[in-house]
Length: 178
Image (cartoon, rainbow, N blue to C red):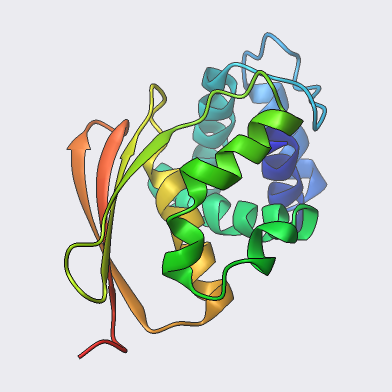
């Protein structure tokens, strides 16, 4: 689903011609033919994003974060039940590992998902530590941004990189808590 959503975003924000260009300019073992239920090497995604960056002159990091924001809207359209039980950003995000990733694994058994650790010891603050074997902390940041935008809450986020793209700490602070 991640690959098909990425190409859909590129088509919507740029054009079908740009999609064709980045696929043709990349050395993709899959040939750039993706299905929403397939599992593909994350290096293919990296190649596509690098090609898009070269084509558009938009930094790779910005493209990945924007894709994360877009992907959040796609996940919510496909799985609205994820939002039904959660009325706030913090309640939703705290369930990513224990609920959402469990459900994603049911739908996509081969999915290799990141892990999150949570710290709520400070009132009005959620600290999420992201860890993955893949370098997609930027994607996690975009997904978190998408969640904040969806709920429309006054939350600020600070990101601390822990390891080169594979681990990061996201400190989310609500302006509603005094």
